[in-house]
Length: 373
Image: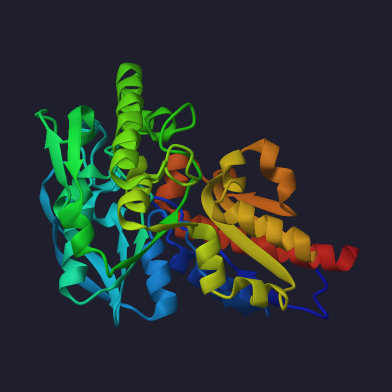
């Protein structure tokens, strides 16, 4: 970085799950770097996962709406979504995400997405006709059946499980489609996976949500059946649909039933924030996330930012909690909180403190590189 010609630093992080959000990351780094004479521009970003609704709301100047909903196990709680004119920005994880459950409460047969449907219904009652849905961080693999039933889908099911996908027999889509015929839906997705198969919603994500190996096989079979039911009722084959396996398959179902547009959450937020234009003015970009690994280069913020920086020949630094060695070479420099913290839990709990230490290390690196050029 040429410190004489360009002291502009673009901050473009994702949130650190369970620790720093993207706004706090930007606030801390901006404060520390500007004291040292640098100019910063903060562009907090999201990929469709936890915290993305707040990011989108920030750029659209939408206001929060708080209402009662239910978590993935059906327990009442309050959650917020955002509203600007006729556009609602709604995050699945706020209603029924994994973050609301204790580890011992993970129950793949009885978690569902009904709470998400409750928030969507409330947004419609407030006049929303355009829904921007952020679906990462879900606690269930129910094919979206919980939410869709709340929204008007009739499901024929003989099971006592709250996860309706486990014994779904048939559906009636008439009422649902009539109610949503004038509603435009955009879904921001944080993964590319298909709904079923070896890379599908059950095989890849169900174990993280408490599923046993036998339950993974059962859920994958049921998601294949669900896909067949969707094709039978809508004529749309979603089995190979990109992003169709996000949030337990709700994306594939909403695409088939409600013509929802599935997009990369990262690309959507990068465009919304005008990242591409601001990149042209930057001397260096600093991105970040809780952990970077190979998955970071499949639609996640740090990997996408690194690729764009490489294309424009702009240096890019990453600040992370943890990093796999294999991806270190994709960034000009990687700063990990685990280098400084006593433990991983310490780095999560005291992330603001360690971020300030890393800010000074970044300054030192920038001056060292300038004098060595």
